[in-house]
Length: 256
Image (cartoon, rainbow, N blue to C red; front, top):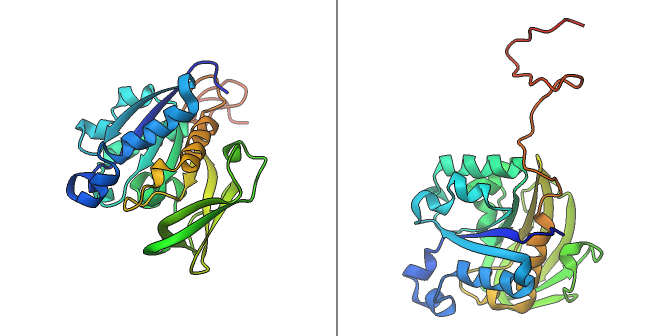
């Protein structure tokens, strides 16, 4: 665990809350604010938290903000295409350099997650008020700390397999639904120097991010995703004995 507070940026698309009254009633201040409150509730003074949204300049994810972010959480759904490619490239570079990333619910189809996974990240879904049971399959993992087995969500959107992602480095949770479907709902990945946690619950039509156990999982994921490196650095190809960077175009050293 970091000795200094974890610097968290909670990113939210913040569109449904503005245009759909039913969503605004559940999240009057925006889903991103509720997610941030859940992290603060669980981590207390172990984290400092800021929020950013799609409509902020540069989506609120400037170079300066990302440089001061240890872990970024991401929720998007209806406006993935509106996220600027240059911002995606910027976030991608910071993840590979060691910034943690927690991707929530429909963020599975965000530009940043599909870029990091290298697959379509598509899945099956049904939005008919399914009960979701989240089963812990890796109880020793720190993200599962304090999480009930199963974690019960009375109503949520169903996500089902096949989920087109690479085999996770760690599978922590599997969800089952009232229709009999199952889904890999809590997965971790490492890309470059960065750690990534995907967590499924969170359709905008339900008060998922008010659920105390969902909030616990997200906060645990934030703590886990902090890099264990002392500093952030983009992976590079270096000559072993000299530390010289090889750029792939020419090499002036001795031929051995």
